[in-house]
Length: 395
Image 1 (spheres, one colour):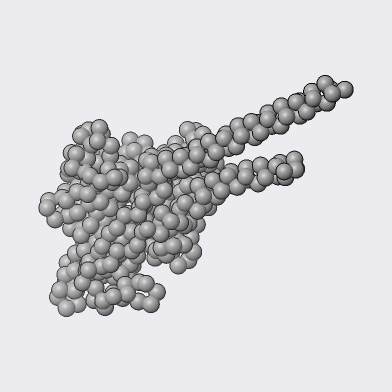
Image 2 (cartoon, rainbow, N blue to C red):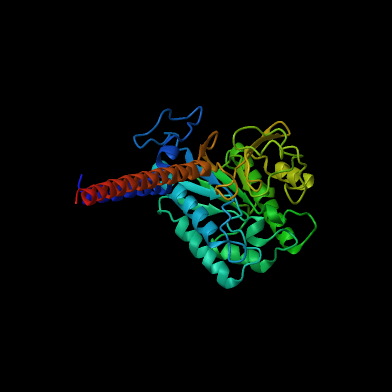
């Protein structure tokens, strides 16, 4: 074979191995993984079946729920770590939007890793990167909750950080979002410390008002639309129990009862949680349950998955982190929610270890090719040496 043919064959194989590994790991791997996911069907659908676009005919809301993206900041974030983790989240999110077409996306806090101490310049840079990564069409609504890394733990938060966060996302951190007759209650759980701090008082006051509005909406529906005297001036919402979303989980002792491939590692499950740091306090948790009687609670913060049943009637799902930085197997929740029912499924993203294995395999292939090339070149040189030596002897 001519020398130039061998050379170009080696170049072609090199491009195929390197380019193929890069294309698969950075783009294509997300498609087969997320294609395994599907929207769960709500039981007892009023219309039954699905519409021509695949949506349940009872107009259940398709909600995608993820948590703890932790966009790295200027202080503690290495440039390569930023590049790697943010690219992973961007490709995962954009692929999920394209394949699953959610109507609404909730991110349960800790959007940023250094919001609690970032300067205004660094904050604006973090926000710009967030909007680039989590860009979406007008068909999808993005709703963001506040976490302790966004405004600081209770002892670090202040009005400036909270209002800066609310201004970026153009909404109050404690409110109700209504979609197709479904009430989603967003709770600023960082401010539920119970010590009477100004932000805590403001959030609790707003929660009491929202509780009154929801209860009045239920009572008005049961009374045939007649407004009770105690409900004068209240805002009317659809008469259904809310889905409650927040960053901190409600109080639980530990993750000892949590199972599944996205649960905390076995050696960490029995570690006791600290109230007001790892989970909400018992008092704050009970107040929320009494005020709102939610049919489902969705929370983040722990970076691991868990299912808990509070008081034998209030289910809570802890949503794992969406970032490879916090776990090898990130995931998110797909929720189909109607006014009377809901169904959940979990969607796992590609594992970081799989991507590393593919790159290592590609590197091993390149090494073998290089050794084979060296062996071939060595054999060629030996052959040429023998030929020259033979000619010399004949002379």
